[in-house]
Image (cartoon, rainbow, N blue to C red; front, side):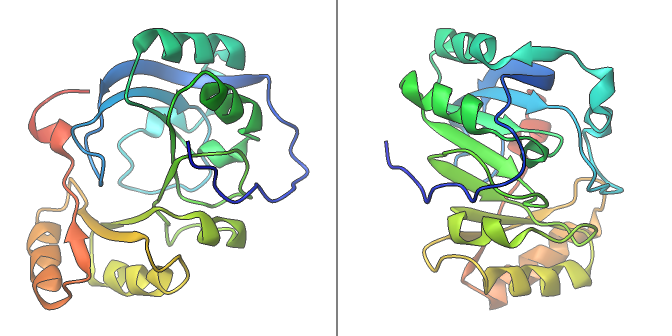
Length: 212
């Protein structure tokens, strides 16, 4: 597997236990890897505070159990997925070195979904970067981005997306994703992509198909 740029050293300690909302085996529902067999590890805790967040139950880490990273790795390995997706919440609130390195040592391809609001940690094969205006990203995320996925609910989000696109690697893929609860966002993105061909539309296919 391809190694990405080493993590920036931080004051966080590599976590042998992490707060976990849920784990489940499904398919990736959105972004470049939509439709791919995926095992999800949803970590608890988030301080970004998106008003339209569809996983607000993940925000308070104290409401969810602490689990050993070794157990999470064994569970993911047993599922035999094409990819393992570490998501949240906001996963980079924690040092992900132990979990990500252990998953990769087990022969698994590891993806991260993050707003980038905290210092980068861990080792990943693919990084989905979904920056939020409510809590701007930490600079350490920008060199590591594989795909930029900006959720759009209003015109200002398109301006934000363009600004973020200037900071990431030139080979990263640019995606605009309609905010599920804002019907007007679909036509807004559609018209934008027609006049800005460097962008693609990302849809939350798992919600259309009613799968996890």
